[in-house]
Image (cartoon, rainbow, N blue to C red; front, top):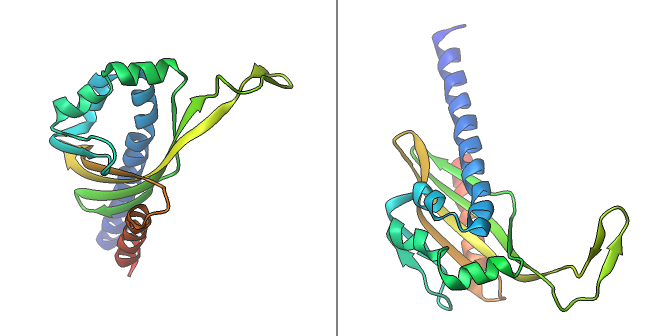
Length: 179
């Protein structure tokens, strides 16, 4: 192989490794939130990280405050009521040691008031209801060889312009990178 070919292969391999690591980071959010594992949350946020949940809900600044979010009694109550975070495949815009990730997240809750239904080979269930769907914008940085969250903004898909703009921004970022 020529030096140029080797360099191009190394660059392509780095992109693949980065995207896999970012997929794993984003995919780890639901299990960490649904188990209340604050240690994990603290490990994946930058020290000065921010968590913005829009105008309707409170957020947090700093890794300790963000990690404490899932230790709240109200979050534990949500977990015990059948909370399940369900994420969609993220759109990743790599920018060297930084990345912008755009994704959807559904918050599902056990529907305790639903009518029990049977599914062949799976037993009975009252089912789940979608409590909320949100758009996420994750701003990541490579820190000591690992991808970490610098900031996360999530906005409910509620018909307003803000979540739509967040999605469009993610698409335009990726479009610019491909030109």
